[in-house]
Length: 220
Image 1 (spheres, helix red, strand yellow):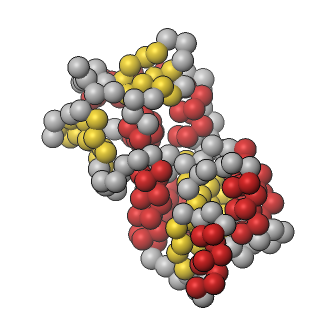
Image 2 (cartoon, one colour):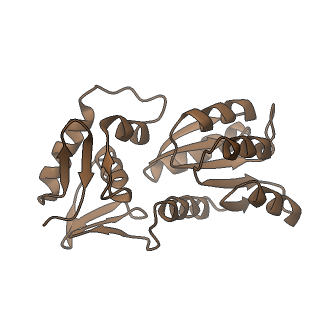
C-alpha cells in the first residue's frame, strides 16, 4: 500500500514517513500545498495523511481540489487546530478522518490502516481469502493457520491483491502501489514477487489473466 504524507515541519514529516514505512507502507512526502495538490491528483495513493497548516496552499484548499477532480483517496487530516470548527470544516471538505496534534504515532498508523480497509469494503482487522489470512497490523500471513514468511515487498504485493481480491490487477497498478517515487526496480520484479508468493503460499490463489494482470481468488 502506498501513502502520501503532507507535512511541512521537517522533523515530524520524517517521523511520520519512518513510522509508516516501518509499518509496511510505501511512503511519498510533500512539504507544501502545491506539491501535495499535484501528487494527490496524479499519483495513485491508497491513503493520504494531510496537514492543514501548509505553506503555499492551505490543506483544506488542497483537499477541495482533489475532491473536485474526483480523487477518492481516503484522507486523514492531521492538524494542530483542535477546535470543532476546523474539524467540521475538514470533514465537510471531504476528509475521512481527523487526528489532532499532538498524537500517538501508533494511533495514526491504526487509523490509516482502518481507512484503507473501509475504502475497500473490509470491516474486520484481518483480511481472508479462502485459506489465506493476512493481518496488516502484525504484518503476518497464514494459510490454514500455517505461518508464511514473506519479505517486505512480497507482503506489500500480497496485501494489495488481498484488498482487491476478485479484481484484475495489472502489473503497472501493482508497481504503482508497492513502490514509492524514489524506488528503482527492474521491469520483471512484479513477476518475480508473484512467483515467490505463489510458492510460499502453496495454494492456487493468484491467477494470471493473460494480457491483463493478476487476480486473487479463493482456491476451488
